[in-house]
Length: 202
Ligand code: DLZ
Figure 1 (spheres, rainbow, N blue to C red):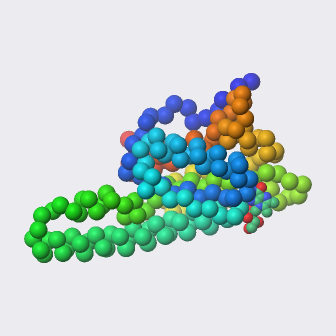
Figure 2: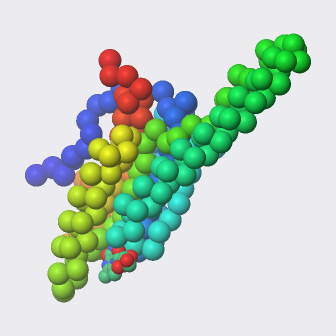
Figure 3: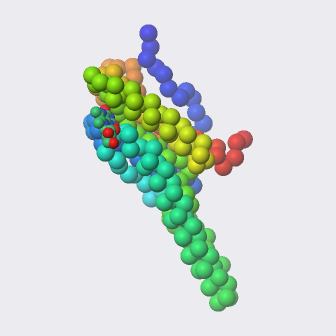
């Protein structure tokens, strides 16, 4: 049986205007690092500027929902302060009656002038001998889903809930000859697609 599962054929979405957040846990680093690289690769392919990607880390997967919430709130605060600076620059420009040059440049110069269009939460949970795994998997999955509905931006579910480490290595594209691919790539592509679509569903 084929293990080729994935997001299927997608349009090439233009990510050049997007601001994307990534937060990842530090447990199971080898798998996490590969997933992160996969996500970044797809963001780059879609044209998301590196300066518009912010990467944060947290100790474990349990911390992911809180981190997503805080990253989004901070990005909103940064954006509103950057926009009030822009507004005062624009007012200065107008009152000085100079050219209309720089407002556009300033808008394009930094991803920080707007909140994130999507945030990818990446974690790797591996089942142990207690109920710990079940509680964290369930709590984090529900919290991430609730968060995206509450804050109104896509929160990409990059949480692998695994029975063995080997399953994670496969899904991070680290097992040669395996039919699995790097799922981080799907998450990067999903962030771009949903980030673009949230600006208007055609
Ligand atoms: C404690 C713990 C354990 C046992 N296993 C994992 C894991 O496999 N993956 C993961 O991301 N985090 C694990 N953690 C840490 C918890 O997610 C969390 O960081 C701590 O309980 C502190 O809140």
